[in-house]
Amino acid sequence: MRIYILYYNFKTLGGAQLCSIDLAMRLLNTNDKIIALTTTPLNKIHSDYDKYNITFKRFSFWSLLKIKKEDLIFCNDRKLTSLFVAFLFFTCRKRKSVYIARNTYDKRKLLSFFPKTIVAISSGVKDNLISYFHVKPGRITIINDSCVDNYNKYKREREKDNYIKILFPANITKVKRQIEVVKTLKYKINKNIKIDFAGDGPLKNELIKVIGDSKQFKVLGYINVFKALPDCDYVCMFSLNEGLGLSLIEGCMFYKPLITNNIKSVLEVNKPGFNGFIAHDFNELPDVINSLPDNNSDEYKKMAKNARKIYENNFTPDIMLKKYHNLINNL
Image 1 (tube, rainbow, N blue to C red):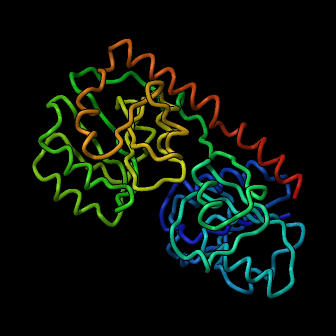
Image 2: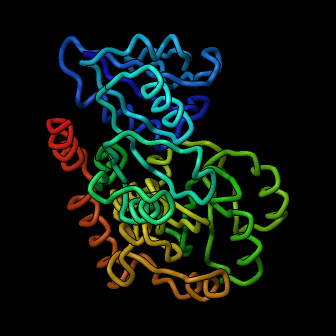
């Protein structure tokens, strides 16, 4: 048996790609292998994927013809999934395929086709599939993405200082809204608060320009987030829309309380008052930031422990794998 991963973008390292690879590797038997079909030019594949035992091939009609009945296909983005389902329809083929829905959408409804079996990574994503695409609820199973526990590998004592440090780990894009966050908070947050933006993206230079000479904001670029998490106090995300928020799960793994808006899928990770804080809009965000308890307070320590509980009880690989095994056994 071969396990196929369908995903358009392997130029960068991202949560969707890494979760798909991790899932495939955990499902492998001794003689199985992973094939990733992508529209990314093969010479543009990110070099970090070399450490995985994956064969990358161009997504094409000929590559789809080579998929056999016993193979398992994980479809990870809407465009390639729609092309794959159309291919199966016009060639009268049946294949064991699962669409993993990781985002919400509000356009191209008529050009979107899904296989019978669908996994939604959050209830918010499931709601979008039902309300916008009119997918029957019985076709959808909610299985949260997971993160390998890297806490013990990277843990260390937080450096002692008088700052409240917030890490905002995400690709720098319009959807993630880092620029709006800086514009909202600049000159409005307490002097002892620092916010680091970890990630790369098309708006990186614009974000640097908006920050200007402010010492309270810093763009770290693409880094190993696990190395940065021990030295921060909070993890923040304020996206326009979000499938689940892998960075938030990683924050919980490292005992970090969260700061987010109130998107339904994000609230599956951030439980206000339990392991984090929410601001309903940008108007509320400065007050929320300025009211954060420092890392020596009892309130902070309690929320940090609760954050770790959220991870252990909901987002470990073992929990995810058990649910996928049950799903695959019924295909």
